[in-house]
Every structure is written in C-alpha cells, then in structure tokens.
Image (tube, rainbow, N blue to C red):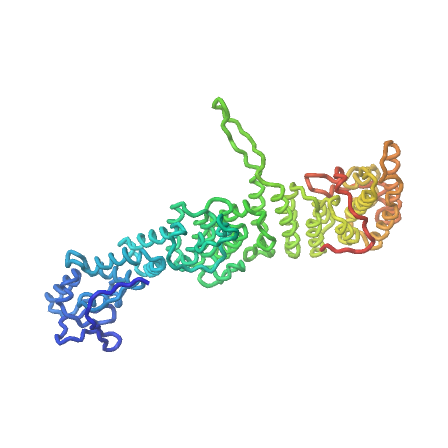
Length: 624
C-alpha cells in the first residue's frame, strides 16, 4: 500500500477524556475549535498560516470576543480535521488510501490551498493521489470505496472520476504489462490456455484476461456500475469477459444467488443490484449463459424489479432457451395464486425462442427497389429439439401440481407442437403424470390432453407402459396396440402396412354409420378401459402378429383391403364382447379425434422407418 508522511515533529495531540484534544506546549491555547462533540484546544497562529476558512472564523470570533469557533459540517468529521490541524502544526501525518480522500475533502473545506501558502495540504495530497494512489491497482479500489462517505464533495473535486478512470485503464491494460498484485480465485477462461509454438506442451499465462473481476466485486453497486460502464466504453474486453464480471458480482453481492434464492433482508439494496446488473449486460447474445439469466430473472421477480427489467431478461432468455434445464425454468408463481409455478413466463420465453425463426428481413435489391424477403430460419434443428425436450420435461414437472389448470398444460404443449421430434415419450410421461395427479378430469379434457400425443412416436417401452395404463382413453390404447403390431411386423423383415381405415377413422373421427343408439358411442371410446379389457384386447392383438397378411408386401389392392378387414374385424369382435363398446362398433365405429398433434407428421402418414423396433413383451414397463 502506498503512503505519504507529512511533517517532521513527533508531537501529537493529547486527549483529556473522549471529547477533548490539546497540544502539549509551553504556550497556552488561545482558541477552541469545536468539531461535533469534540473540542480542540489550539493556537491561532499555525491555523491562520494554513487555512483560509479558519482565518475567517477566528476573525469573527475575535470581533465577538469569543474564544471558540464551531465547525459542524466538515467532511470526514473529527478524524479528518485532526489530520489538517496536525499539518498546520508540522506534526507527522501519514496519509494512505484509507484516509486520504477524507483529508482531501477536509482540506478543501478549510481552504488549505496555494493562495494561502505554497506547498499547502491540498497540493501535497493531489501530488500523492496522482503519483501514488492512482498508480496502484488495489489502492485505487480502496480509495473509491472510501469515497462513498465523502460524496458529493469528492465527486465535485473530480477525485472519484479520476479514480474510476484509473481503475478502468488498468483493467484494460494488456495482460503482459500487469505487474501488480490482484485477487483471483476463479477458473480461467478457456482461451487463457494457449499452446506455446516453441514447446510441445501447454503453457498457461500467469495473468488471465479477467484478472480484475474479483477485486471490483468489493465496490458498492453505484461505483461498480460507473467502473464497468467505463470499461465497456473502451471496447477492449470481449462481451464474455464483461459477462464474467457481472456474474461474479451477482454471486458476491446477492446471498444464495447460486441457489436461485435471495435473502429477504436488504431488499432495496438487492433490487438496485439486480437492476444494475441487467442494465450493464452486453447486448450481444451469449455474453452470459442462459442459466445465469434465469437465475437473474428469479432474483428480479423476488426483489420486485421493474417490469421492463423482467421483460428484458425474458427476451434474452428466449434467445438462449436451449441452454436451460427444467430446474432453471421452474419459476415460482406470484403470491396469492393457487398454482405452484408461473407458467405464463415460460410460455413467453418459448414464444421469444420461436420468434427467432419468424422474423422477416427487408433487403434492398438492384434498381433501388425494395421487397420483403423471408430468410431461412436461424434456429437449428438441434436447438429446436432441445427446447421441445425441455418443455416436455417441464410439463412433466408442473403436472404434479394439483392446482394446475389444464389450459396451462395444453397451451404450453401446443407452442412446441410444431417442432418435430423423433419420440413423444417425454410428452407421454407428462400427460400420464397429469392424468395421475388429476383423477377427476372429465372425459372431454382427457381427450384434449391425449390429443397432444402422437402414438406413432412412442418408443417400445412407452408403448408397453401405455397399453397397460388404465388412465388412458380406450381410443389411445387401441392406437398404441395397433402401432405395436406394426413395429413387430417391421422387426420381422416384412414391409410395414398402411394404416387400416378403421384405425384412421378411430383417429380422425369419421362417421362410419348413420345409426345411433341410446348412448353416445364417442363417450364409450373416450372412457378409460378396465384392466381386464386392456389385457384381453392386448392378448387378442398380440395373437394376430399381422399373420393375416397385413405385414406382407401387397401387390393387389383387393388382397390388401381384405387383410385390413381381418384385423379390424377381429378388433370389432373383441370390442363387441365388451358391453361398453357394443353400440359404438355397431353404429359408429372409430368415431374420434386425432391423437397426434405433431404438425410434422400425422398418425396416418408415419414414416415406415420409424415403425421398426423390437417386439413388445407382455409385461409391464414404467417410463414415468
């Protein structure tokens, strides 16, 4: 630490109790200077030689025949005045980064400038600041911290702005020129490890690019904001390094930030910190991770940040949503709401993510004409698939909430329904969890939620679970059973058949008959099957193994149609034996809705390659 000694006399002020200071001298004191509650018994002559303000006060006291002057508003208080008084007496005074700013402000207040005496205290302190403090990295940070209590005087004297400029300049210096000490306990950035061209080994630089990050975390938020803003204007560091600095500051200043929680104490302070970090975020995508942004969003919601702050974070998160995990996007609902999580925020994130593909750009073409050109989407298939899986996992998690409205579940699932994914196991797991946690759901709602799933895209294990799942409507079980047989045909080396019209009708809701019965056959197919019905239906379809030609390679359409009729006929015969399906199959076979909402492929137009898998086994598997 840099320091400067002023004066040569070894004398010092004596104390008589807590509130009295005096100079041990043969001469009696002739003036009392009261600074707050402390009285200084001093001599006029040395004070008059150095301080213009004391000259004025002492002159006024003489005219009033008073031997005492009052100073109540001096910056730095008693300790700062004592430094100035010692300088007047020529006593030894040691200045350092901790007390120099207070002494400078007090000297300004007392008028200890060059017009009174050459080489006065203000001049000496300014020399010490420029040649000592501002050249030292850690001393500059200490000085900036201590200036907080000296505002706005320190700001008016330009000491704070000079200090900020000094710190920013050092933070932006080439790392090869950093020869001062600094605090660094974090991992280096990947690019800090470079290969030495002259040696066949990895050489690690002694000074990482973000060497300055931890030391700046000591600053109060307003000073930190000023320093980082100054560093950004120099455009020396990459956005990733600035992002690392903001991340380190958030973890240091926001208790439990790493756990996505904020302590309740000091809410106003934490509110300011969150607002400042968001304001300082570089505009470019990827400067900070999506997971950090999500933690920041949770903190912003907790400390009740401004609406614009939350909207900015949500927009940024939507641009990097593929980086998130399910835990990251579990955002608590607002106080007073019955549901556990705020699903509307997640919906907004997904929309922001998908909007990256939908934005149209206007380009200028030859001849000065302007026309609208829709460019190819910037989202990769991998990113879309990651987000689709993320939302499937999120749905499975929020489905456990007994107060979750079905509309929230469906609206969010439909947002990603346009993203083609090879398997719908995650969505099936979410649907099954919702049905399990909401046993009182109506038949209509059960049909609506099952419509989100494409049975064609369930894996073998998911199919095994589904055909034994008593929570699913019978229409879904029938579809799953049929596609399981299709997979069996594919695995045996035979070609995959077209989907029989009966299954298509079951799926699409076509009216196979104009007859009607006393009960609504639609209700029968939407009702859940009993365990006995599931077992019997599965056993019957398993026994078919498409042996009647459905799995063969058909050249004649009549033969193919006949084979379809065999399968559908046996299914009808089996279902007719169940009282609940008698009127359905007699009057309105297969009336229903499409249970595959994936816009990339309907149930009736599945790729044969997707149908190939291993045969199912007659035992229960769980994917939930």
